[in-house]
Amino acid sequence: MRNDMKFVLLQCRLEVSKKQTSPIQDDFRNPVMQGKTDLNYDMNSLVPPTSREAVTSLEEWLTFYFEKPIQFPDEFIDQLLNFHGGIPGKQCFNEPDGTRRMICRFCNILRKEDLVPPAEPSWRGGSDARYEYSIRLLLDADPYCGRLGESESALVPIAAIDTAGGLNAREMSEMDLLCLNYGEDGEPSVVTWSFEMSWAEPKYTIKVADSFKEFLNMLYERPDDFFTTNDCDYF
Image (cartoon, rainbow, N blue to C red):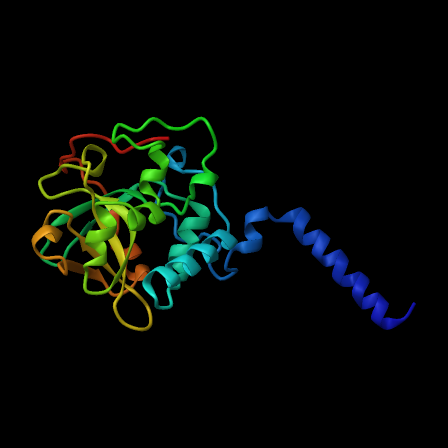
């Protein structure tokens, strides 16, 4: 058998072997990451899984939306592919002045056509509670799209967070958001965005980390004495 034909056969065998031994989702994951940062997610809180192709599609949509290149940090992509839109156990972080905030749940990248019936009831009046935490919806529907659009730079919401005073996003029609801030070239910083403050001061954000990787290392378990009014949505 010719050497070039042997090489082609060897390649085919390797590809078949890889597909038989690896989950389908692994084909889209950054091999450097492989889900190393587990924030102790409640696995029952996840929305339907997504793929690297879907992440790329959203990046392209955001690039068109903001008219500037938008690429997610590898660490955020890793969270999307392994723990899509879930509630982390390590959900608390501090703003620079020491104010403690809590992630209600991470946003997802679902499109309406990705929602598998039956629809999840929404007390907010939407067609499906899962879609209320979609990055696309938050940037494409009032009152968020207009208010976020008035910010000083491109803000991509990545999580719903509690409001000052202990009220969490599950009870709020208007949620505070954790965002990736693409204000400058390079790695986006992580900021909190206040729904209430944005009425009077659209450019108001609070920077909490220089990168999403740094932000992950800031997260910790919710202390017993941290007051919340209600648990987050479970789908």
